[in-house]
Amino acid sequence: MDTLCFKPGAVALSWVLLFCSGGCADQGVEPSSRGTTISRARIGELVEIRIYNASADGGYLWQITKDFTQTIAVLEQYETEVVGDTIIGGPVYQIWKYRTKSAGITSMEVTLRRPWESLPGIDHKQFQLIVL
Image 1 (spheres, rainbow, N blue to C red):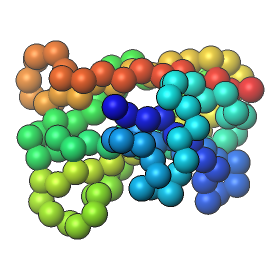
Image 2 (cartoon, rainbow, N blue to C red; image 1 turned 90 degrees about the vertical axis):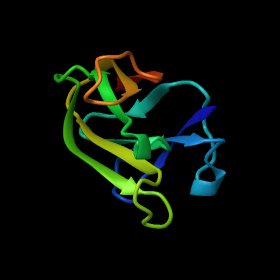
Image 3 (cartoon, one colour; image 1 turned 180 degrees about the vertical axis):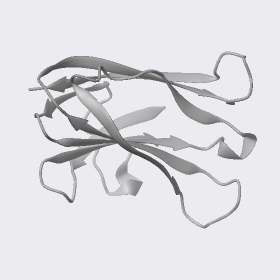
Image 4 (spheres, rainbow, N blue to C red; image 1 turned 45 degrees about the horizontal axis):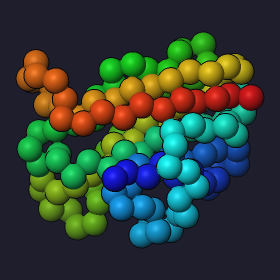
């Protein structure tokens, strides 16, 4: 089961969300919620979403199927980060960085699927972002 965690980031006024298999203690983050809501983001903050992907070797990627409302949060950067050793086909974190723009509530949904297939995904996640 994935756990949603968040902690203050290295940059002032930022939050990091981690979806970690089996909890986040190994990432140096204490699980703060099993839910999917961030309630402390403020206008102008950077929100980073990191989703663990153990299936990258099979061509599976987390793909956004419903993005945050652009008037509330805007995607600034997307990247991947190798977990552990740099083994080809090993697990990765997929990372989305959003800048909050205005107060409101918005949601995001992601699906784990192969980009070239039209089949439904093998896993789904959804959560809300509340900007105060």
